Image (cartoon, rainbow, N blue to C red):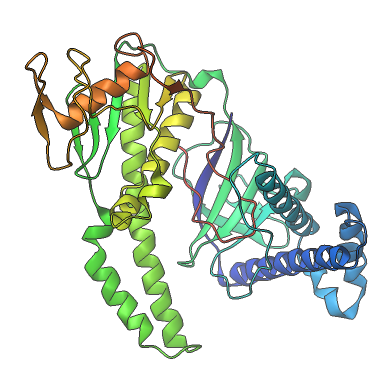
Length: 402
């Protein structure tokens, strides 16, 4: 499977200017191609192909005074910008056809966006020097903070500048069967929640760190300072960076927690089962901030791709499975219970049950792990692409595979 590894970059002042030039040229080519396709559609003309756009908007445009500065950056960066537009159109049309969740039509990229990225393929002849620096065409040798070694030779590298003005190199690598972990016996069901982030079927309860709630006071102060600054001023840009860095610190802490917990569970258990939660629906309730702070979807995605990577079993059960209403001891359905009821006694067998632990055990049973699944709705989840770069809208900083 393909994984994406991200490392922090520390470009010099001149390299920052060269990267800004590459970001701007890629944005201009993207917008020119989108404008050409929208114009052709409005005039009833055939849909322009990528090859024709590349010839007119890159090759021929470099010979004009208006676009002569496109020659200052690598041609591969401009070509990949057109590929990103193709991906955006394909995702939009697949959403209309019901092949994937719906997303909006491609939009123009703004110069004021705070996140930028450019991609270099093997054709760009980028390389990693013997000194451990990343050599990029028409940019130079950029200093990299290597936190670990790459498992194989990467095929592409994407340079990302996030909202907090941090630079990152994101590599795509192939992992093989040597990643399979030794066999273990335990099988686990997980009940995700807000009071406790995760309750395991073996009785373990993992407290919710609540990173956003703990940083809320600092974030509010930074946001207030930003709102008082004059638009367009240098002080406002400085205040915006403080807000972005405060949010990046929260996101990094949450991601680190998810990685550590998901890796631990995958290494120690042969099979893991979770419930398919309706996160989008819960995010529209009064619990929205707590739901986003927990980050259930990111955690489940990590479990999913790590299970596929390390040869473990991962199962999602249906979200309508009554895990909180069924006694895990005798299997009698006792009906729904209010959320304030955390411990209840089964009317059939008299067992005293913890609500969350009982639900985790039922998740494991419904997945066919602890016992044979008794008609439960079970579906194995597809292996996701851990990270994706192409698109038309600003996306969060790419995660780091572990």
